[in-house]
Length: 247
Image (cartoon, rainbow, N blue to C red):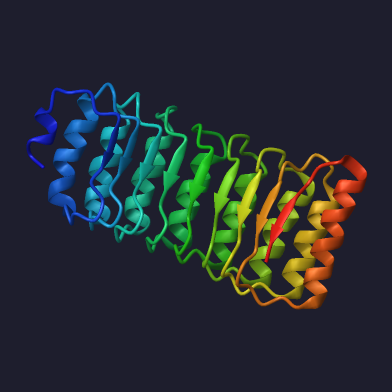
């Protein structure tokens, strides 16, 4: 890893995932991020960088003007580390895709992200699957979606949202959001009430941009399925827009 910061060639894609570089190795990655003028895509997937490593890389990203895709997935990052990443988004306007799945960031971590993303950054894709955000985290995201105008893809799989989380998100989508195109709520223990709320949101907001709603491996039955199917058909009849719903 120490040779990375001294590399002189033009690297545009760098995948050093599953290499257990830890926070120590992330220091060298951070130094490279500061000097590279060519890197566009960087993956540190499953590298055990932890909060300390996330802070080092996040600080370096404040100075970087080229990286548009960053993968921090599966790095044992908690609210402390993701708060540092969120602070970076206040200054970085290049990053458009951020992968944070499989990190225990919890509700406070997602709150730190949402507080920034309301009015800052250029993120278009945010992946937060398996991040233990719960219903409280869904509330923060729903509030963020009222203001954010850049996010088009949002992955919230397996976060224990349940009906309450789905209803909270649906309430926000029903009234305001016009930018989100793809929403993944798979593996969230959503039952009929949550599915019905999402269906109503699709029908109520004619300007809703969503064209892909993924609800795989949830717990709703025939009532929820019918509500979603009717909502999809209603939107097509009224606007000609097709919505793909997977469950």
